[in-house]
Structures are given as C-alpha cells and as structure tokens.
Image (tube, rainbow, N blue to C red; front, top):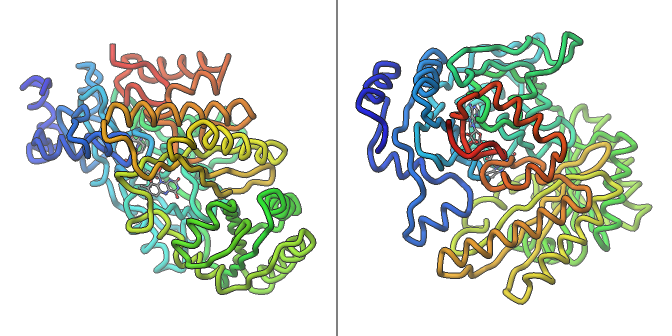
Length: 478
Ligand SMILES: Cc1cc2nc3c(=O)[nH]c(=O)nc-3n(C[C@H](O)[C@H](O)[C@H](O)COP(=O)(O)OP(=O)(O)OC[C@H]3O[C@@H](n4cnc5c(N)ncnc54)[C@H](O)[C@@H]3O)c2cc1C
C-alpha cells in the first residue's frame, strides 16, 4: 500500500470514510477484469498488480475531488464500470486509485418527444433498458454484456451491440457527454452531436478508455420499440457466398437489424453446441425490424439476394431461436472459459478486404499454431454499408499449465492475429477496445498520426495519471 495516510484521509474527506477501501478483498477483486490473461494468472495462483485504494464516489463533484487530488499527488487513476471489458483496460497495472463509477447510476431524463435519455455513466445497461422499455422505448445498443456493463463502459471503448448493423455502435448513439478531466475540471460537450460549430471533441472521449478523464453522464438517442422483429436463417455453401449476400444487403440499403454469419467451423461447433443444429456450410441469421409491412418487404428483398446466391432458406424458427439464445454463446456453460486459452482477435475492414483477412488469419493461426492444438473460429457480426467486422477467435482447449508459458503462447497468438489484420488493411479491433492488451499495436495502427494522439493526451493529462499504460499511451505518471 503506497498511498500516504494524508492522501487517504483527503480521499475520505472527498467521498466519505466508508467509501474508500484498502481492504485486501477489494484490492484483489479490482485487480482482475474480464481479460483472459489476469484471470489465468490468478487461476494459477499468481497475483496481478493491485490498486492501493478503491473509491466509490456518488456524484460528479466527488469524482472531480478524487481526480484533483490524484492530479496534485501524481497518483494513477483507473476508472472502473462493470469490469466486463476484455482488454485489460480497467486493470490498475501501476497501482494507484480505482474509481468505481457504479454509484453514479441515476437516470436523469427520458425525453419522449426528442427521443433521448440522459443518465449517469455508472448506470447498469439492463436497468437502463428496463426503464426505457416501460415507456415503449429502447437504447438499441445490445451488447452480450448488458447485464454487467455500464453506460460509461459502453462508450469508453466504443462498443458494438447485436443490432449495431441497423442502429450503429454505442458511439453513434451518443448525443453529448459530461466528463471530469484529469485535473478535476468538469466539462460538457455541446447538446447535439451534429452541427458545424467546430471540431467534434466529444469523439475524443469515445475510445479513450479512461485515459482522458472519467465520463460521468451521457445523453443517448433512443428509439421506439419496433412493431415487429423478423429473423430468418440461411445456409450458404461457404464464407465467400455468404459475405457477398451480406454485402449486397448492405450496399442495397436494405437496413438489416442484424446479419450474423458463422464460418463452416463455427457452424459445425458453436452453432451445434448452442442452438443444436447439425449443419455444414456457413450459417447466417438475418433480422429486420420496424413496421410490419416495411420489415417484411426488406426481408423479402434480402431473401431474393440469398436465393440468387444459392443460399438455402432454413426458415424463421432457427432465426428466432438464435435471437432468443444470442447471449448464451458468451456465458457458462456454453462459453469458452478457463482452463481453455482463447482470445477474440476481431477486426473490421472494407468489403474488398475482409474475406482475404479471414483467410489470412485462419492460415496464420492454423498453420502457425495448429500443431499445438489451437483452433480458429470466426463469424461476421457487425456490418456497415462499406464493410463488415470479423469476430474471430483462437481457442486452445488445454492451455499450458505453467502461467509464464501460457502467457508467452497467448502473446504470440495475439501478435500473429493482429499483425495479419493490419497487414491486410484491417483494424486492430472493431468493438472491444484497446486496453492493455492491444496497446503495443497502436503505433503500427496510426503510423505518422500517432504523435498527434500522444500530444493530445499530453495536453489533457500532462502528468499521465489517467489509466497509464492503456491505449498505447505512456507507461507511468510523471
Ligand atoms: C460476456 C461478455 C460479453 C461481451 N459482449 C460485448 C458485446 O456484445 N459488445 C461489446 O462492445 N463488448 C462486449 N463485451 C466487452 C465489454 O463488456 C464491453 O466493452 C463493456 O461495454 C464494458 O463496460 P464496463 O462497464 O464493464 O466497462 P469496464 O470493463 O469497467 O471498463 C472498460 C474500459 O472503459 C473504462 N471506463 C469504464 N467506465 C468509464 C467511464 N465512466 N469513464 C471513462 N472510462 C471508463 C475503463 O477504465 C476501461 O478502460 C463483452 C464482455 C463480456 C465479458
């Protein structure tokens, strides 16, 4: 424990004595998020760096007080929402103070005329959704982690939900933000996102993952719950034909709610395990929502495209079954879990590149690591009018027992996967964020633009106290 008694007393004055914890249990809990590596590390009896203290503020003023104190004393600060992030973004690798924002959980306004909700950043995703559903509304950001994630955690790493293909990523739904800067100043971005009044600095906070400050409040666009949601399953002979069908639906602007296409290996393994269908080929789900007659017309057009490309219509039931079980893929007993080693090495690219990226990554993992028992599974999950995301994973059912050996292999797999994405024109990531895990690839991703991002970080956070070592920024406070 390296915070001085004076600093601890000052923290207690800001948030209350019972809201500052240096207890061993808290320090242990807040040393592991949903990143595979620290979980494996702990599982093998090792320890991760722990925070010196965890604080539980209840207001923006308290957060401001905590950051002002940390700024004055050069203490690292790590924002913590639900801890469901998979990139190690919330790990206190340089100790310091973890700020758990979950007590900032009030829904401040649901505006039914202009269709927006304003809520504090620590509100739980599902609780926010329940409140909106009572008014016939929805926040159309449906991540599989909604039960354990927070609104701030949706935005900080630029997440994508199941229906992002129609409604956009979390970052597309946000209208304005309130944030506390590293020195404790509280700022608000303009009230609407689309204007011509200077650069869009709100976007700086989207993807900053706690390195520029703490998001304390967000106004999000909401939408009316649809009259219908229609789902359909189609089987394609291979990835290439399925990709072409999805591409045409997107460039023809059919506005699908979701297109999800599993590669043949995922179809034979994952789809069989979770949905119980034994199929060979590429299994695709297509969904439409909105007014009944419009959704039906869009679906009919989409099915005509699938038919032209030789897709076999499996009907509505398997499509609806997928929708009803869409989150089961990510939770025990059906999800991947320890002692297996796995990594979601997802990426996004334009239509002219994404298929080549899939084949290159599959080859890199299977040819480079197949002899060790590593498998490669993939599906295409979030689509844009210009391209699609490839949600792909390496899986090793029995990871090496020695934690150092496991870690070295894990890092080599990540290097192989991400470097292949970058080489073929893909991004290092589409929606999980950078965190600690992908920090080392940021220079390669941004090239000559990287020093500009570093300069922005330096201006906003001159002492480097905010979430040091993440998103590619400087290792420790100075
Ligand atoms: C089972 C499972 C399923 C998942 N499914 C999806 C999915 O479908 N789509 C998706 O996008 N992601 C998914 N994720 C990843 C993760 O849940 C999301 O990124 C989620 O939105 C993180 O929210 P959180 O509140 O748990 O954030 P945390 O894990 O607490 O934090 C994530 C990062 O954001 C920072 N942060 C958190 N709150 C704030 C704040 N208020 N201000 C500034 N920085 C902050 C943290 O410091 C950290 O860097 C999944 C994860 C799991 C475990």
